[in-house]
Structures are given as structure tokens and as C-alpha cells.
Image 1 (cartoon, protein in one colour):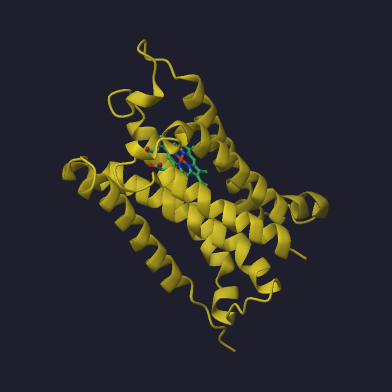
Image 2: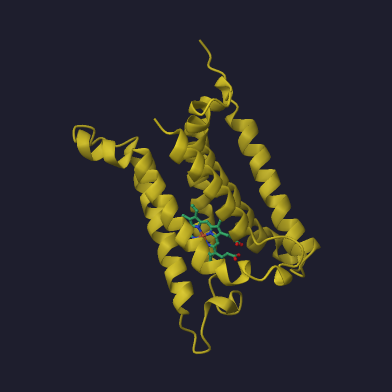
Amino acid sequence: MIQKNHAGKIIAIISVLSLAYAVLRYHILGNVPWKDFPFYILNKGFSLAGFILITFNFSIGPLNNLGVKVSEGWMNSRQALGMTGFLFVLIHALMSFMIFKPEIFARFFEENGSLTLYAGLSMLGGIISFVILWAYNLAFKTNLRDDKVFIEAITSRRFLLLAMLFSLLHLFFMGFRGWLNPSEWGGLPPISLVAFTIFTMGYIINLIGRK
Ligand code: HEM
């Protein structure tokens, strides 16, 4: 029997919305030149879409438990959303490594070229989060299946949430100073704050709706 699965549509819609938000905030309302679309702005789109897809992955089941009728197509999409989210974050990490320079991200660097304290903490959070997400996604395919306790721990939702807590640190240390000054937002909240808010909602749903 073919199972209903909306993953393709959900991924397409989230990707388009995330990219549209980045274009609106940074090109249309902001002053980032269009030549930066293929890398700098696309990177922001991938990071936001990846983040949202992973948040969907761990909050759809608990939302269903809370009595909100989640359709079969959405329930069956969870694994594909999580894996695609991880692949988007992988693209984000690779792209970020290429452009992580004081000329592009002046706010992350001191005048002598070293990282600021907050940038160091933010990147540490990003890298730890990424490695945990990697372990989580790899463990589904591992041939270490005999080591049940280890595999169960790594594939548990708790482990995924741990990864996401590190990604929150990544976002928090990157952006919190800007979050506190709406007058500097230039019309729309920064992507780091949007992602942080979406995660917080997903996390609360997960906390009260998990079985
Ligand atoms: C190797 C690991 C990582 C590195 C080196 C990295 C690097 C960066 C950098 C340099 C930025 C700033 C981009 C910009 O302002 O244009 C950023 C933003 C962001 N990152 Fe990461 N990241 C990593 C992992 C992650 C992970 C694991 C997630 C989510 C699960 C994530 C989600 C985000 C989000 C949502 C933003 C916000 C974009 C914005 O505010 O413009 N990152 N990251």
C-alpha cells in the first residue's frame, strides 16, 4: 500500500518562503546588492529552511498528541523533513565556511582579525549542533545496530533536541544584541530571531505533547 506523504510539497513551500523572507529583508528592505543573492542570501535561505524543517520533524508528532488533527501525509513526512533539514544545514555550513571573513562578517571579528567572544561561542554552538545532527542522521543507517543502547540514545528525540539547543546558542550569541533593538531591524526581524522563535514554539509543543 502506498503511504500518503506530503514531504515534497512541505519542503518546497518552506524553501520558497524562507528564501523569500531573506530576499525581502536583505535585498528589498535592506541594502544587500543583488550580486550577493547566489551565495550570501541563498545561505541564509538554506539555514532558515533547514532549521524550520528540523523543528517540524520533532514537533509534528507531539502536536498530534495534543489533539490537533495532523493528517497522515504530514505524519509520514517527518523523517524526510528531518533528513532534508539536515542536508540544508550541511549546505549552510559549507557555504558559511567559504565566506566566513572579516570583510563579509565584520561584526564577528575584532580589529586584529580574531573572533569576538560572542562569535566564538556562536560558531562553537553551530559546529557542536551540526556534529550531533550528523550523528543522529548517520545512526539510522549504521551497521553498529548490535549496540542497541548506544543507537537508541543517538536516535532518540532527546538527542535531536540536544543538537537543536546548541543551534539555539549558535543563533543567540550571533544575534541577541540586534534582537533587542527593533529600531535597527530595518522593517523585519532578523532571520536568527525568526528561527529562534519558531524553534521555541516547536519546543514548547514538544514538551507538553510528548508521550
Ligand atoms: C559547521 C557548523 C556551522 C557554521 C560554521 C555556521 C555558520 C553560520 C554563520 C557564519 C552564520 C551567519 C550567516 C549570516 O549572517 O549570513 C550562520 C547563521 C545561521 N545558522 Fe549557522 N552555522 C553552522 C551550523 C548551523 C546549524 C547546525 C544550524 C541549525 C540547525 C544553523 C542555523 C543557522 C541559522 C538559522 C542562521 C541565521 C541566519 C541569519 O541570521 O542570517 N547553523 N551560521
